[in-house]
Length: 176
Length: 117
Image (cartoon, rainbow over all chains, first blue to last red; front, top):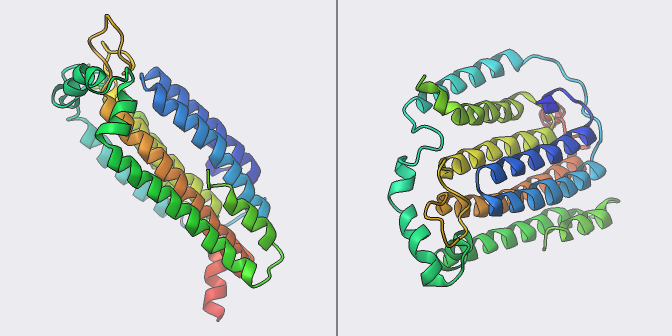
Protein backbone atom coordinates (compact mmCIF):
# COMPACT_ATOMS: atom_id res chain seq x y z
CA UNK A 1 0.00 0.00 0.00
CA UNK A 2 1.27 3.38 -1.01
CA UNK A 3 -0.44 5.01 1.98
CA UNK A 4 2.75 4.58 3.99
CA UNK A 5 4.88 6.61 1.59
CA UNK A 6 2.60 9.38 0.38
CA UNK A 7 3.04 12.56 2.35
CA UNK A 8 -0.01 14.49 1.23
CA UNK A 9 -2.81 13.64 3.62
CA UNK A 10 -5.41 14.50 0.99
CA UNK A 11 -4.07 11.73 -1.25
CA UNK A 12 -4.04 9.38 1.73
CA UNK A 13 -7.71 10.14 2.30
CA UNK A 14 -8.55 9.39 -1.33
CA UNK A 15 -6.60 6.13 -1.18
CA UNK A 16 -8.48 5.14 1.96
CA UNK A 17 -11.76 5.60 0.13
CA UNK A 18 -10.58 3.51 -2.82
CA UNK A 19 -9.30 0.84 -0.45
CA UNK A 20 -12.71 0.66 1.25
CA UNK A 21 -14.41 0.23 -2.12
CA UNK A 22 -12.02 -2.59 -3.06
CA UNK A 23 -12.74 -4.28 0.26
CA UNK A 24 -16.48 -3.91 -0.41
CA UNK A 25 -16.06 -5.63 -3.80
CA UNK A 26 -14.14 -8.39 -2.03
CA UNK A 27 -17.09 -8.83 0.36
CA UNK A 28 -19.49 -9.18 -2.59
CA UNK A 29 -17.24 -11.86 -4.08
CA UNK A 30 -17.32 -13.71 -0.77
CA UNK A 31 -21.16 -13.80 -0.73
CA UNK A 32 -21.65 -11.06 1.85
CA UNK A 33 -23.74 -8.39 0.08
CA UNK A 34 -25.06 -6.82 3.29
CA UNK A 35 -21.60 -6.31 4.70
CA UNK A 36 -20.39 -4.95 1.36
CA UNK A 37 -23.17 -2.35 1.31
CA UNK A 38 -22.30 -1.21 4.80
CA UNK A 39 -18.59 -1.08 4.06
CA UNK A 40 -19.14 0.94 0.87
CA UNK A 41 -21.48 3.41 2.57
CA UNK A 42 -19.61 3.77 5.83
CA UNK A 43 -16.02 3.11 4.83
CA UNK A 44 -15.87 4.81 1.46
CA UNK A 45 -18.48 7.47 2.19
CA UNK A 46 -18.66 8.56 5.82
CA UNK A 47 -15.02 7.82 6.66
CA UNK A 48 -13.70 9.94 3.79
CA UNK A 49 -15.97 12.82 4.81
CA UNK A 50 -14.75 12.61 8.40
CA UNK A 51 -11.11 12.52 7.32
CA UNK A 52 -11.61 15.45 4.95
CA UNK A 53 -13.11 17.39 7.83
CA UNK A 54 -10.16 16.55 10.03
CA UNK A 55 -7.46 17.55 7.57
CA UNK A 56 -9.38 20.72 6.79
CA UNK A 57 -9.21 21.57 10.49
CA UNK A 58 -5.59 20.53 10.94
CA UNK A 59 -2.92 20.29 8.26
CA UNK A 60 -2.83 18.91 4.79
CA UNK A 61 0.81 17.94 4.51
CA UNK A 62 2.73 15.52 6.64
CA UNK A 63 6.10 16.84 7.76
CA UNK A 64 9.02 14.72 6.48
CA UNK A 65 10.56 12.87 9.38
CA UNK A 66 13.68 10.92 10.14
CA UNK A 67 13.73 7.17 9.48
CA UNK A 68 14.87 6.32 12.99
CA UNK A 69 12.31 3.89 14.36
CA UNK A 70 11.60 2.23 11.05
CA UNK A 71 14.06 -0.65 11.28
CA UNK A 72 12.84 -1.62 14.73
CA UNK A 73 9.22 -1.31 13.60
CA UNK A 74 9.89 -3.45 10.51
CA UNK A 75 11.45 -6.12 12.71
CA UNK A 76 8.47 -6.20 15.08
CA UNK A 77 6.06 -6.34 12.15
CA UNK A 78 8.02 -9.14 10.43
CA UNK A 79 8.15 -11.27 13.58
CA UNK A 80 4.44 -10.79 14.29
CA UNK A 81 3.58 -11.55 10.67
CA UNK A 82 5.65 -14.72 10.68
CA UNK A 83 3.95 -15.88 13.89
CA UNK A 84 0.52 -15.23 12.37
CA UNK A 85 1.40 -17.09 9.15
CA UNK A 86 2.61 -19.99 11.27
CA UNK A 87 -0.71 -19.94 13.12
CA UNK A 88 -2.69 -20.19 9.87
CA UNK A 89 -1.12 -23.52 8.95
CA UNK A 90 -3.65 -25.33 11.16
CA UNK A 91 -6.65 -23.46 9.80
CA UNK A 92 -9.30 -25.07 7.57
CA UNK A 93 -8.95 -24.56 3.82
CA UNK A 94 -10.55 -21.40 2.36
CA UNK A 95 -14.14 -22.20 1.34
CA UNK A 96 -14.13 -25.68 2.85
CA UNK A 97 -17.80 -26.69 3.49
CA UNK A 98 -16.65 -28.96 6.34
CA UNK A 99 -14.94 -26.18 8.25
CA UNK A 100 -15.96 -26.04 11.94
CA UNK A 101 -17.60 -22.64 11.43
CA UNK A 102 -20.16 -24.15 9.03
CA UNK A 103 -21.22 -27.32 10.84
CA UNK A 104 -22.44 -26.22 14.25
CA UNK A 105 -24.71 -23.14 14.44
CA UNK A 106 -24.92 -22.01 10.84
CA UNK A 107 -27.34 -24.75 9.59
CA UNK A 108 -29.80 -23.90 12.36
CA UNK A 109 -29.97 -20.30 11.16
CA UNK A 110 -29.83 -20.92 7.43
CA UNK A 111 -32.53 -23.64 7.49
CA UNK A 112 -35.00 -22.35 10.08
CA UNK A 113 -34.74 -18.58 10.33
CA UNK A 114 -36.73 -17.87 7.09
CA UNK A 115 -39.74 -19.72 8.58
CA UNK A 116 -39.25 -18.50 12.14
CA UNK A 117 -38.87 -14.82 11.39
CA UNK A 118 -40.47 -14.58 7.97
CA UNK A 119 -37.64 -12.62 6.35
CA UNK A 120 -35.70 -14.29 3.55
CA UNK A 121 -32.51 -12.37 4.35
CA UNK A 122 -30.85 -14.30 7.16
CA UNK A 123 -28.42 -11.53 8.04
CA UNK A 124 -31.31 -9.17 8.70
CA UNK A 125 -33.23 -11.66 10.80
CA UNK A 126 -30.20 -12.48 12.94
CA UNK A 127 -29.27 -8.81 13.31
CA UNK A 128 -32.72 -7.48 14.15
CA UNK A 129 -34.32 -10.41 15.93
CA UNK A 130 -32.02 -13.05 17.39
CA UNK A 131 -29.44 -10.43 18.32
CA UNK A 132 -31.68 -7.41 18.70
CA UNK A 133 -30.21 -6.48 22.09
CA UNK A 134 -26.72 -6.48 20.60
CA UNK A 135 -27.86 -4.14 17.84
CA UNK A 136 -29.34 -1.86 20.49
CA UNK A 137 -25.93 -1.87 22.15
CA UNK A 138 -24.37 -0.91 18.82
CA UNK A 139 -26.75 2.03 18.55
CA UNK A 140 -25.73 3.06 22.07
CA UNK A 141 -22.05 2.94 21.05
CA UNK A 142 -22.71 5.15 18.02
CA UNK A 143 -24.68 7.58 20.19
CA UNK A 144 -21.89 7.63 22.77
CA UNK A 145 -19.36 8.34 20.02
CA UNK A 146 -21.47 11.20 18.67
CA UNK A 147 -21.79 12.68 22.18
CA UNK A 148 -18.05 12.19 22.72
CA UNK A 149 -17.14 13.96 19.49
CA UNK A 150 -19.42 16.84 20.41
CA UNK A 151 -17.87 17.06 23.87
CA UNK A 152 -14.28 16.92 22.61
CA UNK A 153 -14.80 19.49 19.89
CA UNK A 154 -17.33 21.55 21.84
CA UNK A 155 -14.84 22.33 24.62
CA UNK A 156 -12.81 24.22 22.02
CA UNK A 157 -15.90 26.27 21.19
CA UNK A 158 -16.31 27.35 24.81
CA UNK A 159 -12.82 28.85 24.84
CA UNK A 160 -13.60 30.84 21.72
CA UNK A 161 -11.08 29.25 19.38
CA UNK A 162 -11.32 30.45 15.85
CA UNK A 163 -12.08 26.95 14.50
CA UNK A 164 -14.91 26.29 16.93
CA UNK A 165 -17.76 27.03 14.54
CA UNK A 166 -16.46 24.57 12.03
CA UNK A 167 -15.75 21.93 14.65
CA UNK A 168 -19.33 22.03 15.80
CA UNK A 169 -20.46 21.51 12.20
CA UNK A 170 -18.15 18.51 11.88
CA UNK A 171 -19.39 16.96 15.12
CA UNK A 172 -22.95 17.19 13.85
CA UNK A 173 -22.01 15.06 10.86
CA UNK A 174 -21.92 11.80 12.79
CA UNK A 175 -25.39 12.03 14.30
CA UNK A 176 -27.08 10.09 11.44
CA UNK B 1 -0.16 -28.48 -2.22
CA UNK B 2 -2.36 -28.48 0.84
CA UNK B 3 -1.04 -25.07 1.80
CA UNK B 4 -2.46 -23.35 -1.26
CA UNK B 5 -5.97 -23.26 0.19
CA UNK B 6 -4.75 -21.01 2.99
CA UNK B 7 -3.99 -18.00 0.78
CA UNK B 8 -6.96 -15.98 2.10
CA UNK B 9 -5.42 -15.98 5.57
CA UNK B 10 -2.11 -14.80 4.18
CA UNK B 11 -3.73 -11.83 2.44
CA UNK B 12 -5.30 -10.96 5.79
CA UNK B 13 -1.95 -11.25 7.57
CA UNK B 14 -0.20 -9.02 5.01
CA UNK B 15 -2.90 -6.34 5.28
CA UNK B 16 -2.87 -6.57 9.05
CA UNK B 17 0.90 -6.10 9.15
CA UNK B 18 0.70 -3.09 6.80
CA UNK B 19 -1.76 -1.50 9.22
CA UNK B 20 0.39 -2.46 12.20
CA UNK B 21 3.49 -0.97 10.58
CA UNK B 22 1.70 2.32 9.87
CA UNK B 23 0.53 2.53 13.47
CA UNK B 24 4.03 1.91 14.86
CA UNK B 25 6.27 3.75 12.43
CA UNK B 26 4.33 6.80 11.27
CA UNK B 27 4.46 9.92 13.39
CA UNK B 28 1.43 11.60 11.87
CA UNK B 29 -1.71 11.07 13.94
CA UNK B 30 -4.09 11.02 10.95
CA UNK B 31 -1.96 8.34 9.31
CA UNK B 32 -1.98 6.33 12.51
CA UNK B 33 -5.77 6.32 12.40
CA UNK B 34 -5.68 5.21 8.76
CA UNK B 35 -3.36 2.39 9.85
CA UNK B 36 -5.76 1.32 12.58
CA UNK B 37 -8.48 1.35 9.95
CA UNK B 38 -6.52 -0.96 7.64
CA UNK B 39 -5.79 -3.29 10.57
CA UNK B 40 -9.49 -3.37 11.40
CA UNK B 41 -10.52 -4.06 7.80
CA UNK B 42 -8.13 -6.99 7.64
CA UNK B 43 -9.95 -8.53 10.62
CA UNK B 44 -13.25 -7.97 8.77
CA UNK B 45 -11.89 -9.76 5.70
CA UNK B 46 -10.75 -12.61 7.94
CA UNK B 47 -14.23 -13.13 9.36
CA UNK B 48 -15.99 -12.85 6.00
CA UNK B 49 -13.54 -15.31 4.46
CA UNK B 50 -14.35 -17.76 7.27
CA UNK B 51 -18.03 -17.40 6.43
CA UNK B 52 -17.58 -18.14 2.73
CA UNK B 53 -18.07 -21.67 1.45
CA UNK B 54 -17.45 -22.76 -2.09
CA UNK B 55 -20.80 -24.55 -2.54
CA UNK B 56 -22.94 -21.82 -0.98
CA UNK B 57 -24.61 -18.59 -2.05
CA UNK B 58 -25.31 -15.32 -0.27
CA UNK B 59 -27.46 -15.89 2.83
CA UNK B 60 -30.78 -14.84 1.33
CA UNK B 61 -33.33 -17.64 1.20
CA UNK B 62 -34.10 -18.97 -2.28
CA UNK B 63 -36.50 -21.81 -3.15
CA UNK B 64 -33.99 -24.30 -4.57
CA UNK B 65 -30.87 -23.50 -2.60
CA UNK B 66 -29.86 -25.40 0.51
CA UNK B 67 -26.30 -24.24 1.15
CA UNK B 68 -25.62 -20.66 2.15
CA UNK B 69 -22.63 -18.75 3.43
CA UNK B 70 -22.60 -18.59 7.21
CA UNK B 71 -24.71 -15.54 8.19
CA UNK B 72 -23.38 -15.20 11.73
CA UNK B 73 -19.97 -13.66 10.91
CA UNK B 74 -21.73 -11.30 8.49
CA UNK B 75 -23.89 -9.94 11.31
CA UNK B 76 -20.88 -9.63 13.60
CA UNK B 77 -18.90 -7.68 11.00
CA UNK B 78 -21.87 -5.49 10.14
CA UNK B 79 -21.92 -4.41 13.77
CA UNK B 80 -18.14 -4.11 13.88
CA UNK B 81 -18.00 -1.79 10.83
CA UNK B 82 -20.45 0.64 12.40
CA UNK B 83 -18.70 0.55 15.77
CA UNK B 84 -15.38 0.98 13.97
CA UNK B 85 -16.48 4.13 12.20
CA UNK B 86 -17.78 5.51 15.49
CA UNK B 87 -14.35 4.92 17.04
CA UNK B 88 -12.62 6.47 14.03
CA UNK B 89 -14.80 9.55 14.33
CA UNK B 90 -13.87 9.79 18.01
CA UNK B 91 -10.16 9.40 17.20
CA UNK B 92 -10.27 12.06 14.49
CA UNK B 93 -12.07 14.43 16.88
CA UNK B 94 -9.24 13.89 19.37
CA UNK B 95 -6.73 14.64 16.59
CA UNK B 96 -8.51 17.94 15.94
CA UNK B 97 -8.33 18.76 19.66
CA UNK B 98 -4.62 17.85 19.80
CA UNK B 99 -4.06 20.16 16.86
CA UNK B 100 -5.87 22.98 18.69
CA UNK B 101 -3.81 22.42 21.83
CA UNK B 102 -0.35 21.83 20.30
CA UNK B 103 -0.61 23.29 16.81
CA UNK B 104 0.76 20.08 15.34
CA UNK B 105 -0.31 16.53 14.61
CA UNK B 106 3.20 15.08 14.47
CA UNK B 107 4.02 12.79 17.37
CA UNK B 108 7.61 13.98 17.95
CA UNK B 109 6.56 17.65 17.92
CA UNK B 110 4.04 16.91 20.64
CA UNK B 111 6.63 15.03 22.72
CA UNK B 112 9.08 17.91 22.42
CA UNK B 113 6.49 20.44 23.54
CA UNK B 114 5.60 18.21 26.48
CA UNK B 115 9.21 17.99 27.59
CA UNK B 116 9.74 21.76 27.41
CA UNK B 117 6.92 22.43 29.85
